[in-house]
Amino acid sequence: MSSEEKITFEALYAKHKKIAISKKEMARETGLSVSTLDRLRRAGLGCGYIQQGQGDVAYPLLELAKYYTHTIQTL
Image (cartoon, rainbow, N blue to C red; front, side, top):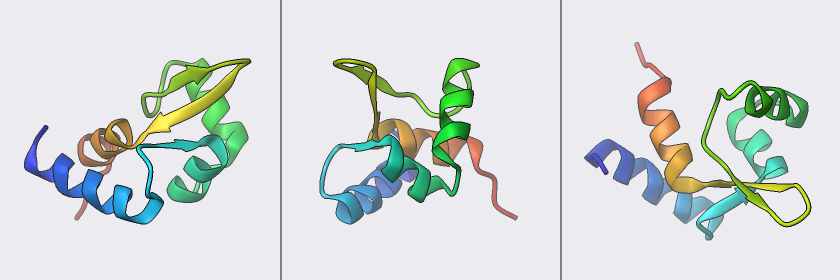
């Protein structure tokens, strides 16, 4: 894990107090709708996720931290 990923993960963990978030929480976190997250996931794009039980999806904060640090570019 890079230092940027670690800092991002720690900030996300401090905010959510757990290591994985639901689709609704992910939608609020990223500003994307749940349906957009579903579409990206079906296309094999976006942030890594884990499948739980009967189709429930969770997004590990570590995957979100990686996504933020490698995908989001700042000016």
